[in-house]
Image (cartoon, one colour):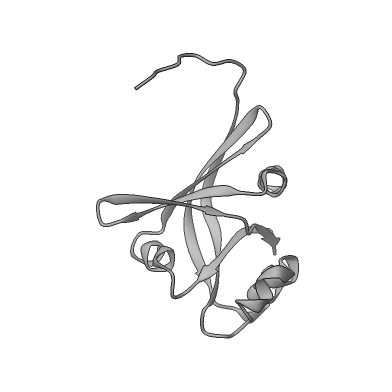
Length: 130
C-alpha cells in the first residue's frame, strides 16, 4: 500500500472515476493520505462526487508518472471521524481555506478491497487520427 501511496503522491494528480446512474464520471484529484494503515482521499459533501460514492462506492483511480501509470480499483468508505479529517488537512494545508475538520462539508474516504496495477508504457502501439 505504501508503494501505491508514494506513486500517487509523486504523480501529484490522479483521476477518480465514479458512476452517476449509468454514466461514468471522471475528475482530477490531488489529495491522497496514508492514515492508520489505510489510503484516504478527500472531497466536499456538497460535491456530486460525494453523492456518487454514497450511491455506488465502487471507484477507480488512475495516475501517470514518468513512463508508468497506475490503475486502482476499490470501494470507497466514508470515515466521519474528525481525526481522519485532521490528518488529511494537516497533509494539505492549502485546502484549509476551503475545508475544516468537522465543518459539515469535509469528507475523507478510505479505499478498501483495493487492487492496484502499475503498468509501464514503453512505446506507442498505434496512432489513430480522427
